[in-house]
Amino acid sequence: MTKRDLIRGNSTTNTSASSDVSDKDLTSKASKQCSNQSKENEGKMLQSIPDSALFPTCVLGIYTCYFAYGYLQEEIIAVSQISAGVPLFMQYLTALLISLGVKIFLSSSNDTKFKLVRYKELRIGFINNCSMFGSNYALKYVDYPTQALFKSSKILPVMGLGLIRRTYSYPLYKYICAGVITLGLVVFNIAKLGSKVNSMAINTTGLLLLFFSLFFDGLVATQTDKDKNKGEKSTPFDLMFANNLCGIISSSLVILSTYFSTGEFILNEITFSNLDELLLIALAGTIGQIIIYITINRFDCFILSIVNTSRKFFSILFSIVYFSHPISFLHWVGITLVIGSISADVFLSHREKKQRALKKVK
Image (cartoon, rainbow, N blue to C red; front, side):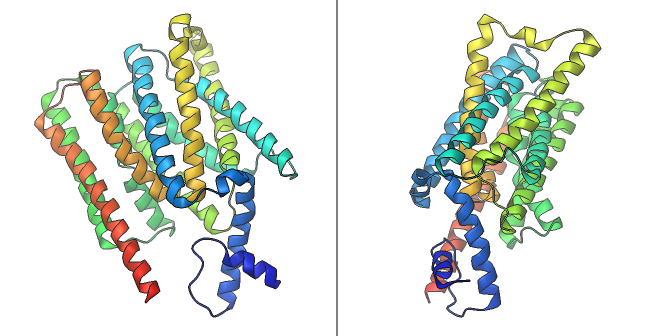
């Protein structure tokens, strides 16, 4: 490794504070150089944005896009009773075309060899689509607040599978927060069972689909971070293209199977009256995907799970008020436990990072 290479390695973020150049240091720097090379494909403009500015921008973008996405999703799927495969198909198609166009543009502008898709990206795409399948089809059996609260507990499978696959290790407070989240979910669903105000909200099939979705949420997060730790980092648009390629294939299979089993072609459900909402779902989902993949690429999946959890709370509140979902005191206790524990986790994580930074300075 040349002196120039070492200098480039030292310019990356989160480099070791140690001045001793050991074999471990050289391995770490080589891995970070691989990450830098993949980052070049993000475009010079994105690279020039510091983390302190990019992170709040990504958070705001995720909140905005998925707030709109959640509203339109419930309006179309739960209220209008349109098949879940229709908006999914349109979202996948839109995102696939946009990500393909960006990949071609970046490849030509950076004079790099164009690669359509790689196995590791398809693997992540397949796992992520399993999660999306579970959460979207669950809306046929449970109401949106139930779906949103379950998806808010994404930290649980991320932690569980992270320990099993040895991707992460956690301090005690994270286990406590995870336990409180679990308690909040139990309280929320006991309230549903006790009130019996809405039989759709306690459907067993819907709950099983949500557990199915959460398992794959944990799997995609740990696999993504494992690939990054190995230096196998992909650009946001590589991951986005692979995800939507898997999505367009899976949703097409669902549409065809529905046609052959029932004789109904569900794309016929697209009409002039709902076309604008379907296009908005596709656009909101596509822009949201771009921001999420940028966040994963620049930061990590655990941070993203915290961001997604907090924005779910506001989606739940809006859904309860706008769509007049019945809510009781126990429901609010469950929601407060979930969101409160997430807020505590964010605060304690920030304090822990500050303490580590002070120790390095000393």
